[in-house]
Length: 330
Image (cartoon, rainbow, N blue to C red; front, side, top):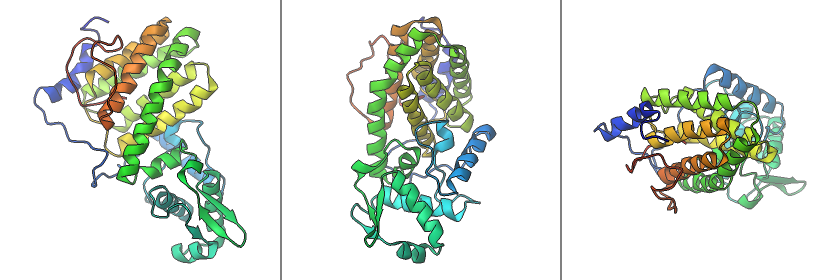
C-alpha cells in the first residue's frame, strides 16, 4: 500500500502525536469503571431480546449471534429485573473470586441473602450451571466450580471477569493470544473463498476511519462497526467454528470499550490495516489479508497488555511509517 493511502485515517491518531493529551488507559486501574451508555438502537434491541429470553430461566445463547447483543450490562442497570440483577451479581462474585471455588451455598441461603424468591434463585443457578460455574446437588447445595470448568468464551463470563483488575488483565491477554492464532487464518480463508459480503467490510472499515478522524473511536457507533467488521471477517472464512470465535471477539470489543480502554482517536496504522484487510478480502488476496489481520491483532494485544511479540515495524502487514503509537483500533 502506498504511504498516502487512506491518509485521512491518520488525522485522528495524528492529533495525539501533534500534542493533544492522550488519556492513560490501564487494565489494572483500580478506578476503572464500565461505561453505562447503550449501543445504537438496533443493537440495543438485540440486547433487550437476549435478556428477555434469559428472564424465563433459559441459559443465554453462547458464542453465536451478534456479540454486542450477548454482552452483559452493568451490575443492575436502571430498569433491570430481579433476575438480571441476581444473575449479574452472583456471576460477578464467582468470576472475581468473592465466592471462590469450593464455596457451598444453598437455595435457602441465597433466597435470604438477596431477598428474592426461591424460583428466581433456582432459575439463576440453572444458568450458572450451564456456564459451568456451579454444580447443584441434593443434600449438598450449590458448589462453585474451579475456573477450568467455566465456559470462558461465553460473553457473560467475559463481562463478569472484567470487574476485577487482575482478572481483566488475564482474560484480555488470553483472548488476545487466541485472536493472534485464529484471525489471520480466518482472513486468509475469507480472501480465498470469495463469499458475498466483502464490500460491506470495506464500508465498515471506511466508516471506522471517518469516526476516528472525528475523535469518536470510543463511541457506540464505532464499537458497533468494529464488532460487525470482525464478526463478518470470521463469517466470510466459511468456517463455522471461526464464525463462532468471531462472536467471542465481538464480546471482547464490547468489554474493552465499556471499560474505557478504547481511545477516541484510534491508531492510524491499525485503521489503515482494517481498510487494507477489507480490500484484500474483497479482491481475493489471501496473503495481504492474513498479514493485515496479523498486524491488527498484534497491535491491539501490545496496546492493551504491553505483551511482547516478535512482530517488527518491517513486517509486511504493517503500513508504511515507523512511528510508535499507543492508541488501538482493534
